[in-house]
Length: 318
Image (tube, rainbow, N blue to C red):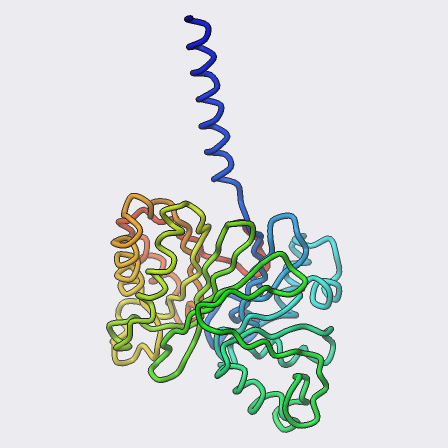
């Protein structure tokens, strides 16, 4: 009888260890190609993401592409040339909004690129089609418009509906954001094998934007946090707390990001927020912004989030 009890205890312990290890296993590999907000010409918003142990990436925004790939190759992230990574590893682009610091790398590198899809909300695709790939700003490498070269295929996303990301094992679900009302940005919920990563383009806080768009995203992902299937959140902090609300231009500060995290915690449970990975993006490269922002976030992290500051060309896992 004692032996049976010991066996049961041992089995239970092994099961708990297995579950713990399984939950802790990374689901995604991320390679930042650019991490700053507008102004850092060679280091603008762009993040390659793929299932762990896969070379089938999509690019979350595309402010900097080729230069970021070259830095990653130099850092030993890829056992391949920059050409191979840019042309073969990146299977498509997910564009949150069409501001230049989020699309310029994709546009300028299009002549040397291979066929890919551009996924975005319809308004964003319209800007790319009508204002960039139009034979005036740049040759039309898109699939629509005036004399299209059809290198890039436009894939409109419907808010809240899941879409397969072609030539990868991932899917995406888009949410619209307010980026200085009425301008629209987007968040992308990437899914692979039941695990998720949440990427935000530029966005202002709901209270300032007079919007409920962030709240709708929090309501959608709170169950994933409770289930421990959300591996991380990419969220922008462009300015330090000293930036006045009337000059945020659709962006966040450390105070505002933590207020939004508190709203999420009310839905997901404060106990489930501890050690959730929060990847800080889009810091404006002005003066001491980065040092100040890091200090303000570090001193206001009552939820115990794992705050990550990505570096160009340095891979990490989620």
